[in-house]
Amino acid sequence: MNGDPEPRYVLNRVTPSEWVINDRRYAENDPRYVVACVYEYAETEVEVVWLRDLPLAIRYSTAYDVLEDVSRVQDSSRATRPIAIPHLPPLLAT
Picture 1: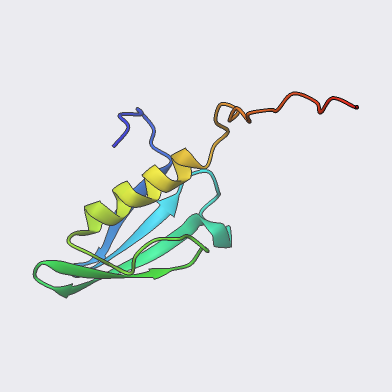
Picture 2: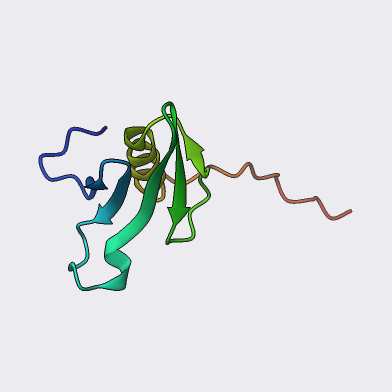
């Protein structure tokens, strides 16, 4: 992950085979607080129910992989440097 002292997204275990990913930007009573529910599907596979519209997979190897993917996608959605657009010189009138 990114090494922030207070990461925005955290993974919390609910039962031995279920986790939730929480967004610390919102209060616990805010519906946006829970980003996803993660369920152990098999010993080496988890399934995700997304509670936000994120372009991510529904199956991963571990719950930690889900957390990393959420953090990566949300970090990349922040503003980036402008993309240079090549311009052509104006046409000469003849």
